[in-house]
Length: 422
Image (cartoon, rainbow, N blue to C red):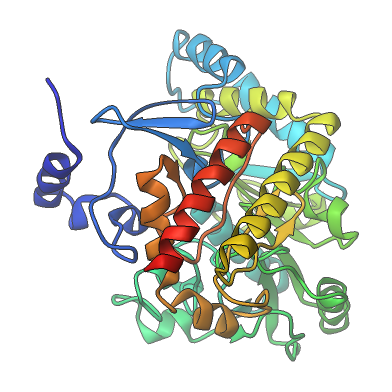
């Protein structure tokens, strides 16, 4: 039976809000009908109509090896043959935890979850329990999942929907949440339990921390007795072999991870030193649990992914991202389309403005100028898929060969020229 994107979207809207299971997939911020993926391989996805796209979405980050990597498929297939969920401990979850903690300086223990949202939510609860304090400081434009207390001034999917907050979140849920501008050290006093930050902001486009910002947070937290939380759901095991600690030289007290550590299956985790993690049940009074936490398929996929990601892989990832970012900047300059293409390690951003923003207010000015949706659709028509929202980033991975990057840049040149021509 053949399907069309339009027909599936119509069917989906009858049984799912907006026809989708995550708002940004609806194309609301760029307009039009989303493509429904039928299959994927490496750097490509195919929709139900048979159209092939070079994919820079890569499931918003997990696809660092590319889609359907043979080692991941082999690991998941073997795990599935032994059963899909047990509700009991497994070898796989121990091995994945050992691999993650071995790479991150200062991370001694962790607890697996089923998503990055669960990981961030639990990390906040842990910090509050460990300090006996209530106040959380986060930064405008940093997204830490859709838990109530962290949705205030969130980036990414929240901003893409034109929302400043979220209906259904009572005032009490955010009463102890303080939102500060990114790249500015906030006032941190003895009521603050934790300062949560994306070490490289990647949910408001790509915004690099200013020199001294992360170290300034570390110092201010130390002075106030507060904990510093790195939300590495995006940066973890993409930015560097040892995550943001290796990249920045700054070590937080608490971490949240997701995306890459699941190899495309639903996984997250939060962790800290053994001393801090001793507060988590069954050792301490901070409760956290999950029926599918440490799922054997997900841990198999995550471990297989991390095994491929040796130090040489990160050299190659940065080379690929550099080729893409430099090529994109040249394409836009040649076309006369004002744009800035920031790159931080293997992460690539895109802003249709003349300078890279440093905070969420600056990002909004650029993201809402109406150029991104035009470029997005011109590019999609030419077989290259970016995320359908101006607050997202590009996720080049090991599957994006030089040939694929060059094909993408050629399509971008044509798309940019079409935008300029109006």
